[in-house]
Length: 102
Image: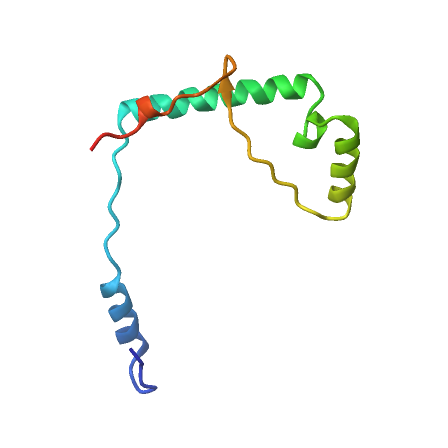
């Protein structure tokens, strides 16, 4: 839709606002909230353990040759990304019990 230069701005804004779909809020089940809270608790404990061991950055956990290379990349302004999966007692946290059922 093209707005002519003579069309008032308020009319254009009214059309845009009128075309926007109303947002729906999602209800979070208690099981989903409990699952997220457990995951957050395990993750925070893991992060605390890493800090106590002197591992502030992910690169700090690497063996020496890789650590030096990672810090060199950081010094050059590179961004390092590593997928992390939180585990509880050595096992992946089972999120299926917390997923919403429809």
